[in-house]
Length: 334
Image 1 (cartoon, rainbow, N blue to C red):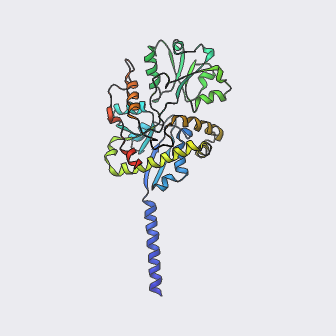
Image 2: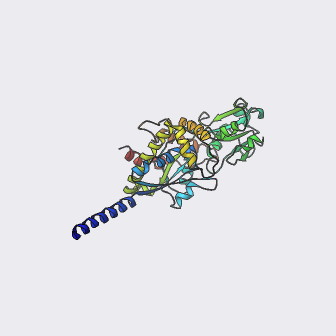
Image 3: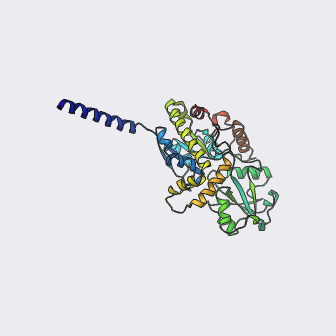
């Protein structure tokens, strides 16, 4: 009887130990976002909240960004496996010595735009000359600088550049004729502040032919030589795409999940739902087996835009195919 008891105890102990090891065996992945929790990153939060990462055998840490956080610096310091970043900043960083490689491109359209008050006298790009324009820096200024170069405007004379914070105050306070906005965020902040849409003029970078790819996932090139890393990130992509598909399909549910991640308490479901609905317009491959696939033609177009900055191009050398890889995406698609 004692031996049977001891055997049962041993089996139970072994099962507990196995369970502990299995639980501990989850692959750890850390992803650094470009900004604070909002619907712009809903796919990651939905995948986390719905257990998609856990089901894939992953222990994922989602690190929010902010005005003082550079995703490039975070991954260069080996504090993240992947970062969400805009391609202009990623390729500029690559040329500067941080070998970033795009492994997935969920957003295949640009949401960046210049929003102007009609009262400022701006109705077309030619009216921008002589005006004060709000521009985001920290890697977000590159499409604007290329647009100005295309128009033949010098940023130290033909126009006045106001280094814009991540708010819409310069437009509301008439400090600038136009400001940088995203269709899913700041544009609606202007509307919520009481400005009528009929009193605004918007210029989508996509329409001006200077749009560059935005929220993509980047890793360090050296890590792609590690089969275990590629396998881990393939599981991460597959679960993330599932999260994005859910977010696009159920914007209100996604909004609630995002709001739960906002430690500031300022986010609301109504605003995040509206943001998610606009973010969905930038993910044209949602619900298909091509979600997250970086179109080489779109990549090449972005590179061309970044090299066409006149005397101040964003990048001076074409990185060619070294700037992206489909290896992880293809592994996730299997």
